[in-house]
Image (cartoon, rainbow, N blue to C red; front, side, top):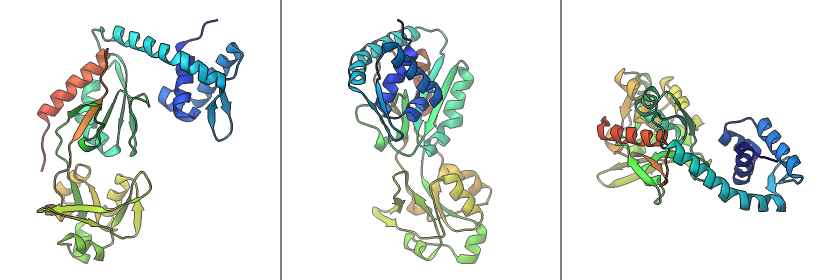
Length: 302
C-alpha cells in the first residue's frame, strides 16, 4: 500500500513539534486535515504512531521506530526534489522565512514585496515572532535577525540597514510635562513599558561616550506590541521607546518629537541567515541574490 509524502511529512512535523497545531501551521494545513492524514496512515499501517491526550502528543514505540527509519529517507527525497527544482528556469514554490516583527516591517516593502513583483510564481510564508527559533528544525528556509543573534553555523548576509531606537513623545505631552534631558529624567515621566517575548520587562537601554545606562521606567501601560505603543504615545499617554523605522514618518510630520537622541547609538544591523544547502531551489537562490543586491544599495537613514 502506498503512502504519500504528505502523510510522511505530517508524521515528521508532529514528532518534531510535539503538537498537532504547531505542525499544522508549519505545513500550511488545518489541524483537522493533519489529524485525518495521520489517522489514515495509522489505519493503513495497522499501528498507532502517536499517543494522544488532551494536553500532549508523543510517539509510541512503533512511532519512534517509524520516524527513525523514515526520517532520513524522507530527507533524501526532499533533497532530490530540491536538486531538481534548482534547475528551474523560473523560480517557483514556497519560501518560509522567520523574523521578529520589527525586522519584518523594515524589509517588507524594499525586499519581500520587491521579490514577489519580480517572481510572482513564488509564495512567501513569513512568520513573525519574538522568540529565537531553530530555523532548520522548524522548517524555515531563512531567518532575519540582528547580526548579534545569528547562530555561528549559519551563512549570514548583513542587510546594511541603519537601525536605532528612538525615545519619543507627542508635542502636546512635552508642552505639558517638559522634556527629559538625560535618561534618569525618565523616572519622573509616565512611560510605555515594554514586555519581552519571554515575559520579562525590558529596561530602556542608553549609551553615550562609552557610558551605558539602563532605566527601569514606570507608567500607566505595559505593552508587547510596537504599534500599540505608538498609538498610546500619539494619544499623549506618555513617552515611548520605539524603533526609529516604526515612527520615522510620525517624526517627519511633527506628530512625535524625539528626545535623548544623543543617548541612542546605532544598533547591530539586520542579517538574512540560512544554513548551507547542497541544492538550494531556484526561488531561494533568487531571493539570496536579491538580498545581496539590496544590502549593497541599502540606504542609511539618520
